[in-house]
Length: 253
Image (cartoon, rainbow, N blue to C red):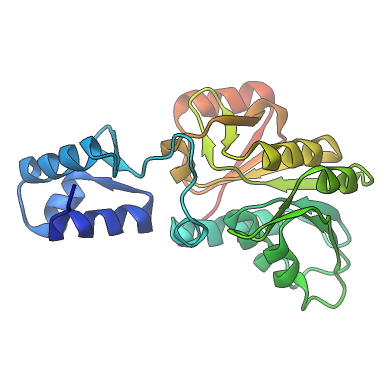
């Protein structure tokens, strides 16, 4: 389906923000909410967007969106989460950082920490932390995923299993209503599971946009993690789930 100029602009906004809402779009384009609803209906029927209550999101059932688009989604929230997460990491700690644009934000916030040991399967994280003169940065090796600089496969898993670190800082592509952290690539999930297995504690870094997305492969439940750093108060059901499991929630400000 060829998009109208307004629909093309709506799609650009969805790629930049992760979601678009009917009322906000009506204000942005100075048209009625009925007009926006028709636009979104046509775009969803064409498979360009998926409807949610009050708006639409990028489709995300079995294929992730591109790395650059992911990097731009909720960029300010990710930076705030990165700062909040880094504040919880003491100098002298050992930690894993997995693949993801939010874990890269954590890495940026760790550049002034002292005497860290970081094991990562994320080449971007290694490059971000390379200027820190006191940080020991260990890349796992593995098969390079050129789309985002991730290292996956058996070699990555085997390397991770040689370590036992203080903290795993992990991200994911989606977080569903039952509290399951999800991703798209089974190879990446195997690495993430090994990371969680080999850490004394585990922290999820995930913004509110992950609650609006879907992905097919399960990494872990919030109940298996010690901490969740996010940017907005979670839905009541997830807040209760974390309370019951003693999973601490920290809101980045």
